[in-house]
Length: 155
Image (cartoon, rainbow, N blue to C red; front, side):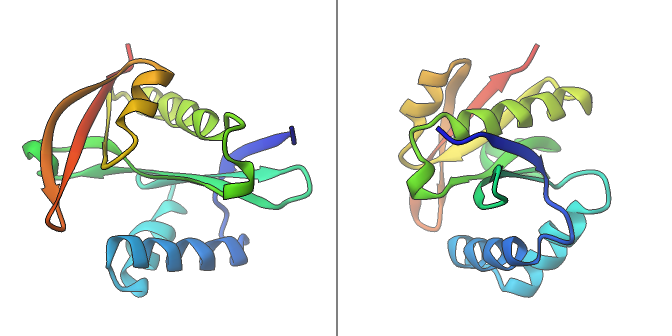
């Protein structure tokens, strides 16, 4: 197993930024310019959204997690912190990296004074229940697809 470092995305991570903007734009069907301005560039200002990346000791990009505060989001949940995405490069999966990214996210959310963390998922609810503390609180619809809404109490 490779040593992994979890850190904030930096504006000097040009190749990683380009990859993330493209990936999020395709996944969320939002223009790249909007992703760059509202998520990536905003993440450099020192508050939400936060983007953390996992990198191998050789500097190779391994994965990411995005934390954002959503207004009137799924199930009408307002002004709470959501995991907007977790991604691990395929060759690094099943090595506990997603769990490390999520743990980092939980620490940051607590430091910012929030007591809960939310996420939506289509297929991974079993994973989140397995890693502990995540419970399903309802279902909603995104792009005509049912999503499971989950919550973790951090205190």
